[in-house]
Length: 143
Image (cartoon, rainbow, N blue to C red; front, side, top):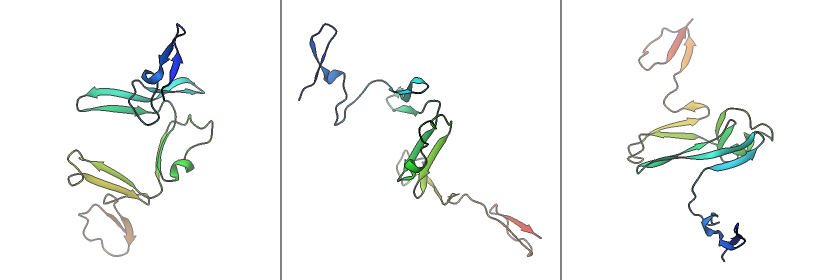
């Protein structure tokens, strides 16, 4: 089905050039929002080169990115959008990858689960025994 709109000269114009199809397509330009602080661009596309382009999300307020139901639990009620913070939430764990340009086999992965980063938390313990070791960065307090 074709869609048309009325042009300035009252003629019918094919709307395909000015509308994004429901099943996908490409667009040109940023995505704006008519918010309480005015008309602002919330999603901005950053032109790069033949190796990639970028994206910026957010504008003067909170940005919530969540997996599972967590995104609903950490999104503030109406009027709470002016908090200038980023919330990255997940129902289970959050995985971070670096050096991933050559695939998963060469990537370095850090997992955050239960508030701890995998392999990067140092233990702080105490006791009456004499300390031993110490080469791994853990801290032992003798009393």
